[in-house]
Length: 114
Length: 113
Image (cartoon, rainbow over all chains, first blue to last red; front, side, top):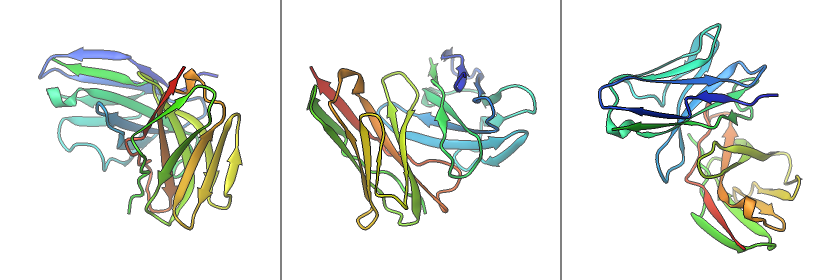
């Protein structure tokens, strides 16, 4: 009965490199959400996906950030040309249905940009 | 518009005492409320939820109270233990909060042994 899985747990990148964060939702969940948490702050919504579809990306920066949730495999949050300000914890959550349903969170990926 | 759970930032309690963590929300259209606990270095963990047709719900050592009139809810933890030290968030959900949950900065609970 595995929960939401994220990898890697820690990721270090140099400025200008690409970061790829992976999220496998709980079994039976087809809805995935990505959040970002800066130090001493709450979680900020980034994007909501269902299989093969982006439903709501209103919280995602317009440049350098993208997300996908393919038919097979985990959801991927991709950050191109990382900058120091991208250093944060990135959490993925999943739910069995969409709007308003309880979201279950993974352990997060802590991205550090040098 | 969005409905953000607003908390006092910190709370310290003695081990064994009861803790009360408060959350105020702004949107009267919120009809479902979820409490999460986030320990240092970990992801938020679901604790308990309550729907707007209820004013109280109990779990194991936790009770959530909802007062829709003043748009306020509280999480009560009985016999607080060191393992309860964490940041606690409430997430109000409603028709117009969209697909995401809006979290405030939460309340950081410190249990003093």
